[in-house]
Length: 265
Image (cartoon, rainbow, N blue to C red; front, side):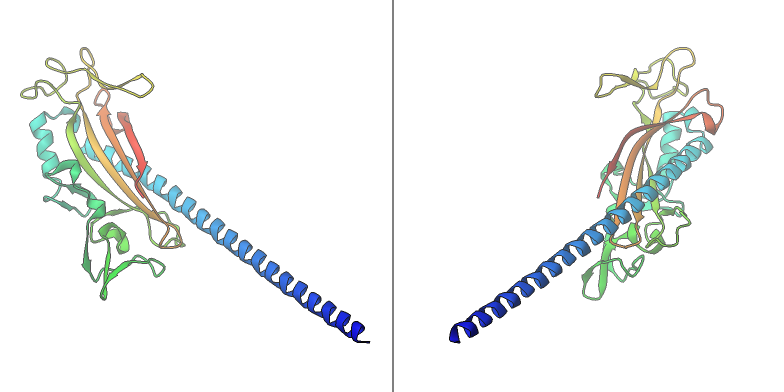
């Protein structure tokens, strides 16, 4: 009789243990599924932000090309090009069109500019660092990028935390410069060879000497910031590019030569 009671008690304990293990297993599997779903959603959000960043980069390239053509940069001498560069906006600032200038050149990093203040986050899901009641965040991230005067690219996607934005800089108005900068307006006498040797050994021609020569190019830097639906999903693309104009005819004949495109963070 006692043996039967013991057997029944043991069986009950084993059953309860098995049920507990099944509950833990189901809970664990559910957590794995939830984690995978979150990971997939985060990845999809990042890819969306990346796609809009690339679209904004193309728009910025077009803006840079138009700027270069409108200011007739191809046919200006070195001094005139430098004047345009230094008068884009005041030193260490960006103007209302998203053009930035610093006498420090490319060592200035306007996309990192920030200060402790009561800045406006781009959306409610954006997490900003705090100093007391104030936010610490890059100016380019602020609502509409207004603090940095970033140029807003309208993706027409209202589901995003905020619209992509970009800033542009002319880093060198005489890239792969002339050995004689004094009097030359059009390429010719006194020019250096305008080739860059690429990693694969091929030559990238920035300008050429002789008949139908191209003047030296202009080096620009574009920085794009894009968001996903979640404000903490952010993509920052940066491109260095050179503009030259074949035959100097119209803006459509300008050559955009990307030197590098990189993901900053």
